Length: 99
Image (tube, rainbow, N blue to C red; front, side, top):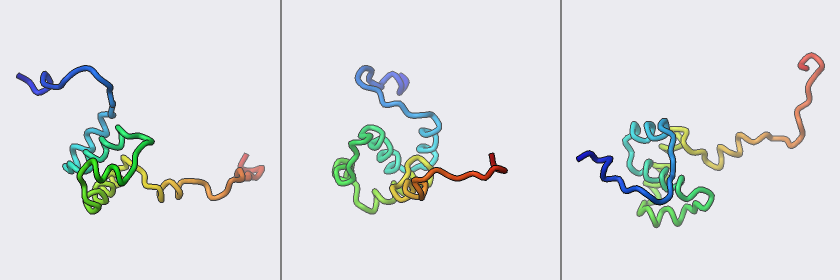
């Protein structure tokens, strides 16, 4: 009997890109994989304190998993989001030569 025949069918789907799954497998870090699955499932409802409790992770394990996921470019930290935002709300000005 193959393992795939043991996977239950029915219910909701959470779909992951194969590249993401390959990255999670290659990093060999169960905490990172678990946290990523939790993030995908929770979406915008994600709460760090709740995640720590529900996943049974210490702060150290959680931080290490976040570090791994950011290193794999699978998640972005709030500080990285702020760095990506333009520093000015005004549109850029172009010279005639640039146009």
